[in-house]
Length: 246
Image (cartoon, rainbow, N blue to C red; front, top):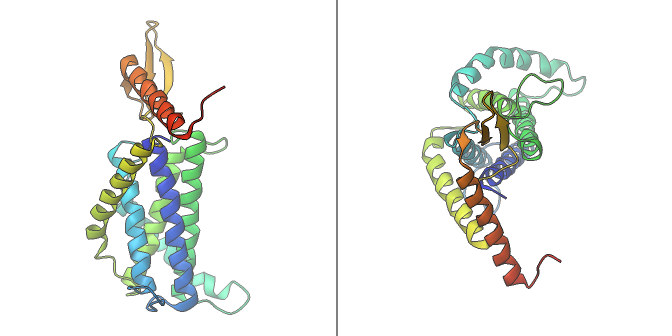
């Protein structure tokens, strides 16, 4: 796996962890502290949410997604979310759900959407536009994130959670991810930055160009270096495991 693929895998993982925390909060309450835990369900939810933001920001730093207007878009989505909250408790046909429960269910819904989009991006690439859709996987990933951010901001304004620790938690997660990536490189499981999103183009002057996932031109020398790096790492693994291609 290359760095992009590792990060997308982490997006899926952190989305799942955030969903698990929301599920626990629905069953036992946001203020409840589970046995063996040093934090309440609400604090755990905020921590996992911060971890998810950290990985998304790493993708943004490397030019794969654009989170620039996320807060503004999330704020703009709030009126619609509030209208849905006003209708949902009386429309499910069974026992009315509390406002907090409805918001936590939305957290689960949107974290699942983020994880699904990250998985689609792993399979088809972030720039890929699914047939019948107008937005790329990258844009749809960000859209689901802004939905999630909107719900988390409402939970905070309802005094159900406290997001003030998020900015302090994000750098800690980024540092941890870099350590993990370093470990993956030492194990030979972090390949060069070549991805399935790289593509070859030929312009009007018959000039052949190799483009990366962000549409930037990369040199053939760099592509060759990355290919050699992958081969060398595979050979290193084969030597350690005693296997080789037949």
